Length: 272
Image (cartoon, rainbow, N blue to C red; front, side):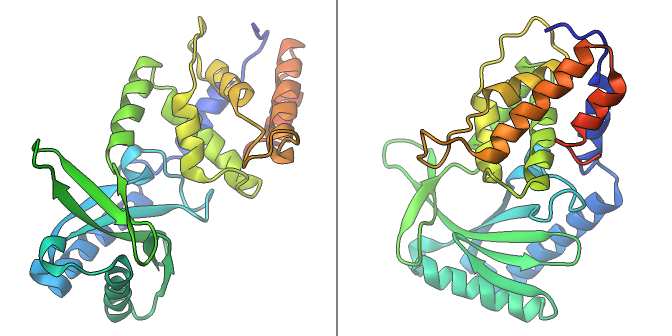
């Protein structure tokens, strides 16, 4: 649909607001805390730790400022020397709880699956115990994280990052912006979609668009978003259905040259 007027500039502005930009106060706090965490983890665990990997939405540039998403967190994967230690997932998590309570005794610390969450005043940090195993048939490493307190599951902490970068590049750098916009909507309406699932859904979408503007990508992603979730194939999720309805109203006002009403309806979707 060709719009008579456009909210492309507004969406671009919002996508930058929903971004922890390099050099911002929030970014400096996060990086300083990550550096301190790594130093304290190595001091506390010594040779029991092989490496510490930063992953997740902060590394992908899809994390939202805490102002827009109270659930924003930074992910750290702690690779333990499991070949020597041979502890259960629950024991590793308990050791991470003990570490966090010792070094951050004034902060909230709690177990979440498969992580230990450390909540500082500016953002949450998810500490994920893990181990790596090298195959006999290749030099590739397989990474394991807790499935529960007694069993492990395979993960690829950096694989999705690479796929997102590829898709974002081939789609004119619009995908990360769309992800941040829709994560802001998701947080605004109470998280009807788990955050990482929303990112994966958008990355998996096929965008065959002649118009490469952010506005077109934004509306296309909303249209493609599956509103039948969690095994419910008959009744749509009402918050996703409302998103689609509000997006159609924005498009209708744009087509009618009514930028004021279009922006008003956009505020039903995004925190403006």
